[in-house]
Length: 550
Image 1 (cartoon, rainbow, N blue to C red):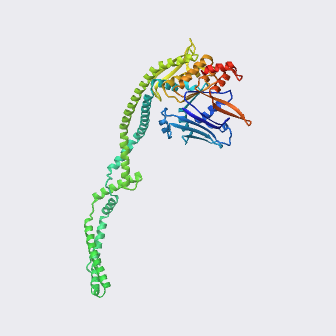
Image 2 (image 1 turned 45 degrees about the horizontal axis):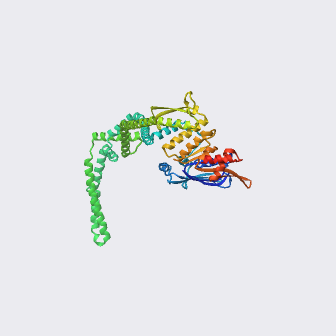
């Protein structure tokens, strides 16, 4: 409920602040006094687009602020979804700066307009005779029936199941498209993979293979080179080793004269040992190198195959080819596994579909059982409101198609007159009838759930006499379970309010200003008497006003 409403620098309002209470609060005032301005400021608070033209003094900031008690509304989840701190005493504030920029706050936290619009309508529900389109919408009608059927718990379960089913269906569609594309490539990828696999690339050393090829391909030349080198080193007369030995012998005769000469001798000795070892190694290698045409053929074939694969895939090394081979294997396996994944997803989607259909059936049965109650209560209330022949017909049909709130479709037919065929509500109900139907629906809903603050904006237009009295009684009864504000021009409704606010204009220093104040009992008597008999209040009007208040 709204506990406080404050408005500064809006239209004709300079600065007003009013504390609101539980039950039925009536708001009265002469035509043009500014009742619509109050609603305009409230609409701004509820998320309406800001207009700098609605600011009284464009050089100053416009502020509309509302304090709400919301502990009974179960809105914690909504606050969490919008990343807002929840507080049982919540404050909404809207500001229009002189620059024209608009700002919104929830509990002093800056919020976007969309965040405000997600929260505010759950706190205040404004209705006027010109804003009854909601009643004609199928979703609203089903929501009313679901309230009586106490369907909201099963509806939540259904919606969770539906989300899961739709998520699986989307994934299935994506996988099937992927499968179509992957299947086209499967044969080619499999061929490439097998080609690489058959090449036996694991553990292959390309450099070693190339050296083996060069050795086998040049075996005779390698042997000759090594034999020649050995002969040159080992020749008895002019071999390199023999020459080095003679040099070592010559230096040996003088090595005792100096450590430098000793070092030369050691170096010659090391060189001779290394040359002898090198000569033996070359001889052994030459003996091992032999011509092997078959082995040469095999190595060449392996190398040519390797070069061909590298060129084909534009890769440089065996490692890169192996990486490509592994990626092909993954693609092939994934494609082959898509069918299993699709089958599993189809099974899961079917389970969620069946579960959602079962929940939808429970929802449908609940609605079917609730419709007679709703029909009876609405027709009884409308009878009190001057429509004794009002009839409703709820055509509820279950289908196989999933919808946001079940699988049902609903057609609501109505007639206000005896002997007249029923027709779609939005086509056959007049504005006045829609206004009364709206009041009847809200009155029924108030019996079953905690509604937000409800504001009626002159929905009593065209109503008078005993019907006005009945309407006021219905509003008062609604006020026993919720906060109701009614902007009215009827004395019967004004008298029924537990609280009475008056909107009036005043000229101050040649400037017209709108005020809002709470009336005490004597002021209420005067206000209601004026509503009954005009500005010139008679004793009879005062007596009548007192009787209405009593």
